[in-house]
Image 1 (spheres, rainbow, N blue to C red):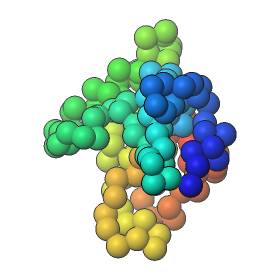
Image 2: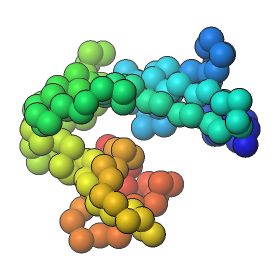
Image 3: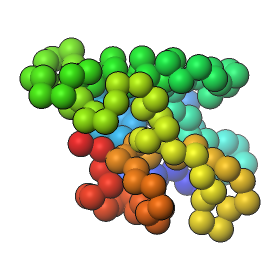
Image 4: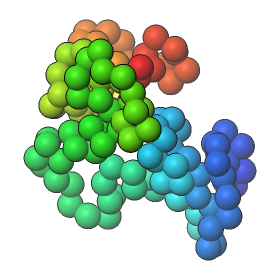
Length: 140
């Protein structure tokens, strides 16, 4: 397998060491260059994103850790005007527990394990798993 089909779908791709760096497809400004893509000698493609946490370390269990990542870009007060430091809109529901709504845990279609959804979007309970290209599920 070649990394080319994946690289063709990403933005901000540049050579980096023995592989590439690219922008995380969630579109958030502060995640530019957070994807690392390499091809193994066996042909496998390894993709690692480290915008919110280091995937090679134990995950923090404290939700406030992840809230701090979200609120580094997003405003905290609905109706506030975006700034250069906080270009993301405020969530109209809460300023804590962001990942519970925007990165819900669930079983993937056809899967047999619980997984945290890393496609940041507006999640609604009891709705089908969002399609990646559906504009109605994109985070505002």
